[in-house]
Length: 283
Ligand code: GUN
Image 1 (cartoon, rainbow, N blue to C red):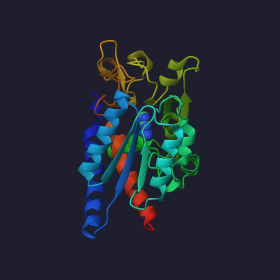
Image 2: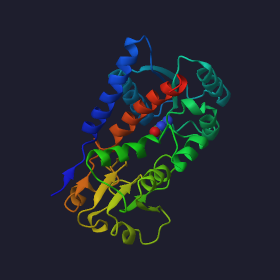
Image 3: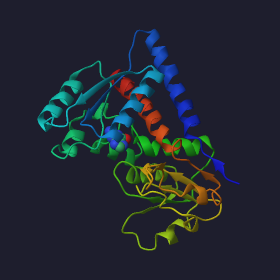
Image 4: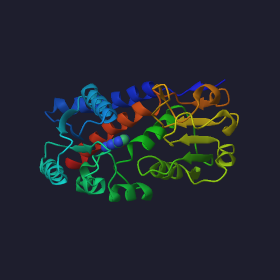
């Protein structure tokens, strides 16, 4: 019998911790703030940005939205980021990805001041995470770690298999699992005989971006299955990278989609914004 990992419950718990701290600061006349930049009309990005703004409201973090036209030039976007970097009223800056094709994402990521980089996308923040001495952790992987911790799942010495090697999920996920002494394998689209890896995994973290890609035959009995994917299936229905209905019968713990990792990413973003406030104010 599997146990459902409830990302809504855990994210509410984390956001409540943030809210208590933000409220205590408010009583001293201090404000924690996040600037959210969105360029263009990507519908998924709009949903994510709205959810981030809602989480700001729930935690008492002041949010500033900068919704820029699809045709905004790279130069204009960089100028806005420079202004926000220099504005001491802004603690965290987030630029929703993907950006329109004419804008160089790397340039934009590098333009955000390291101490305001609440996504943990900049090279120095990624490097600090790998060295285990960091302020910001990448939102989605840190969200996964908090889910595991909340349910008392200790990864120390466990065989953990990540499927996906993106800069946002797969790579930082490996870093955080190694930090907790897991034995980590990172698989990806070029991995041969993927099932041989996943069948030996005690913890599977799916970040593939393909609807219901992980099927029951790929999972061993009692595995912990974490689904980071958010996809639309052929009927337009929201689903993860894991075939939940079949895999749940084998898993000991499993995350649903929606309501698993998604809300955790945003809860960690709120935590990181509070961290950015403390960096700006001498910790
Ligand atoms: N696009 C998809 N995920 C993310 C994220 O975590 N942060 C930002 N800025 N853009 C994204």
